[in-house]
Every structure is written in C-alpha cells, then in structure tokens.
Image (tube, rainbow, N blue to C red; front, side, top):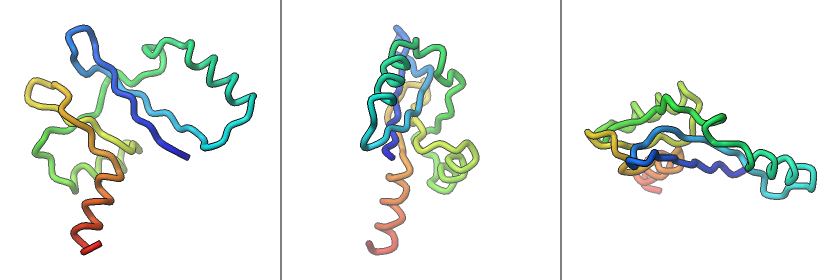
Length: 103
C-alpha cells in the first residue's frame, strides 16, 4: 500500500485540515467505482480540521511519539504564524535513523 498525505488550505492560504488516503498498487473495477464516488465527496466532510502539527524546532523523538500516539504517517510543519513550511513523514524519520546508523 502507498500512503499519500493531502494538505488543504483556506482562501488566506492557512493550513486547516489534512486527509490521509491509502491506495492499493493494483485495484479492481469495483474499487475504482468506489474511489470515483469518494472523489465526489466534499473534502470538508472527511478531513481532520483539528490538525496535528509541529514547529520547525521540534525534536525527532517528539515527532516519533506523536506519529505513534496519533497513528499518522506524516505531520505538517508550521512556522510561528501557523503557515505550512513542510511535512515530516515516517520515511523522513527512517532516513534520519539510517543516516545516523551509518546506512
């Protein structure tokens, strides 16, 4: 399975919600029909509006704890004005661990 993170912003370009979707590598017609119906659903009805986010200076152990606690694979990174400046994913964490381990 692949995990994709979608970030949504309001008209003032402020981060206000995110939606995680799991997609299969190969899907059948029935799944595609369901996906098509889902794509007609307004994102406001399925998104998380109380968005978990971290600041630029958040330490990696805290990010890992948040990912595990909230069962998310990515967390938006915001600045002091709550403006989106990036995303840290579980792959970013694994990459950091591998680099520190000499991998």
